Length: 253
Image (tube, rainbow, N blue to C red; front, side):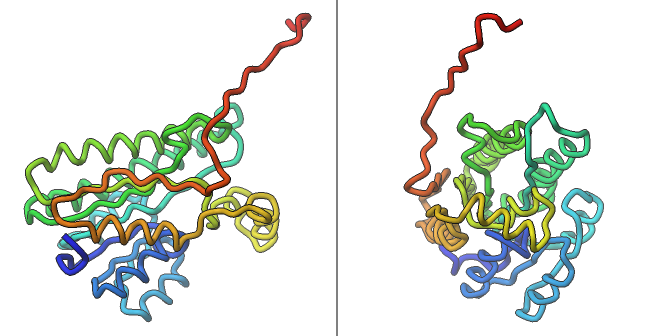
């Protein structure tokens, strides 16, 4: 199947990053797009482009159920995601709840609502944005790694659930992308935008949103008999290798 076989796309995390970039692709391909996000002002700008907008928090299952009733999605892009600075040693209860509810629970709830219709119609493509954090161990927020690892396994399992149907599932697993995520971890202000850019992007050849959108286009445009299951994208200068072995002082207690 290619874009010409599809009519309707549903996108979460629609007002920034990969979600926002993918909407331009889907509109260019002639799809009707449903955009889910919390930022009403940015959603208003999308509505001017003809996008059907849903201003809601993906953690609100009742709102998701209400807003998506009757939507026959051919493409579902689960792009909404959150992270936190620090790790499990410094996490608050709210941190853990947010990571699990946004990065995992919301993904499953949206698929609970839309995936059965894909199977029934024998047509559809799920695109899940995970992370290399779901595949490799490195220093970062432990709960973020755990939720992204769960998205990886969920993506695999969905293929079993739709066995025998022309429903495809692609997990896109990127390394560092130039998005707002690091700024949001620092507070999400113009000042943190500048600080995040200086610390995480300045001088680095990071991935861009366009790189991920190009991978989405590749996966969807593959022939109907081809399921591109996993696309790992990393900057050329970013590698997952390395092993830390901490040597403890002999007199440490």
